[in-house]
Image 1 (spheres, helix red, strand yellow):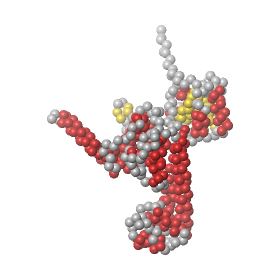
Image 2: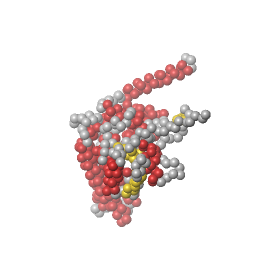
Image 3: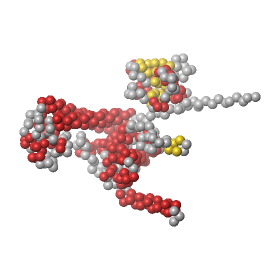
Image 4: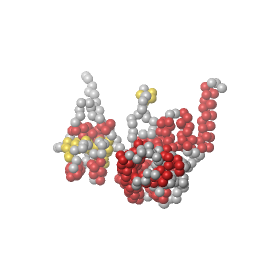
Amino acid sequence: MTRKKAQRHFQLIHPDCAGIDIGSKEHWVGVDPRHEHAVRSFPTFTDDLVKLADWLEELKISVVAMEATGVYWIPLFELLDARGFDVYLVNSRATRQISGRKSDVLDCQWIWQLMSHGLLRGAFRPADEVCSLRALVRQRVTKVRDQAKALNRIQKALTQMNIQLANVISDISGVTGMKILRAILEGERNPEKLAQLRNVRIKADEDTVARSLQGNWRLEHLHALDQEVACYDFLETQIAACDALINDSLALLPVRDDAPQPTKKTLRSPHRSGQEQGALHQALWRTMGVDLTAIPTIGVDTALVVASEIGADLSKFPSMKHFCSWLGLAPPTRISGGKQLPGKGPKVINRAAQALKQAASNARNDQSFIGASHRARLARMDTSCAIKATAHQLARLIYAMLTKGKPYIEQGIAVFEEQSKERQYRALLRKARKLGL
């Protein structure tokens, strides 16, 4: 007599959940088939999104999973989150459908099925106040990038006129450079008079600056220069407006500590005065509870990006390894048959990780424990790998500071050299044992 095989089923984790396939014109929602209308579509107008939330409340749905499709998910996510639903924002790689079965109806049903059995994990999204700060900081970064492009176009117009100003001063967007550019646009063409606008701190003498300002003043190039300088000034006002809103947004965040006193001089910023930079430093310290700028190579701008991307609460990350993996800075786990697979892991685009990599690239000349560690990595690995490893070290320090609330303590280069000697000594002992000495 043949024995019947026991049927194995996945455990039902979320019995009252829904899966949503996000689109630009309509959203498809799938729920448990025990309901009368298990699949419905809703247009993306605001009143239809309210109807979608009302329908889910009628069905007593508590958990909702949706794909992160472009920016189309943001209005629905914010509406459902405000209505009290537990919303999971899911990576599209985790919801890939079986080959040959692709439609909006099947997609929402597949998302519901995976979510009901607890096979989907939600993406990290900080608190709503931090999300507001994050949007402002990202907008400011976009404006700074656009301003850099406008500066490149200014340099192009000067090169076409054979104005070699960039070869005699370090920054044409500085005080001297902008004074000379504005004087040119006002009609001044005499190189000697333009050179008199030189700041005393410029290393090049007045004659050299005058020689660099001899060129051909063609109409089309002057017109391009005029428009790009106007664009540069307009973006400067927009960056200042972003800074004002960022300060207001930081004031709305909960304060985790009393007003601290700065322990070191803040780094110079091209778009903020020293007083504004110091005020931003104080606001970030009060919001985060610790001074992230105490870590070498991390300035106020890097701390602002970290604060806006992750916030001060890291309780959603169970451990330091989870946090570094979310940043994309941890080594990938690609093992099969007990061997490490070749190639790279999945590409992760994380703005906080990019800011930490930029800070790590500045550690080459830093006279600190992190700087010495980075130089040691550069001696034994590629530059990109060393920068990523140093950024990983910075991420571990940030996680420890935010979770434990303890300040950063600089150990110094002497401690690193002592630890390096101990590692070399242990390595020599291992080699001696292998040789039977």
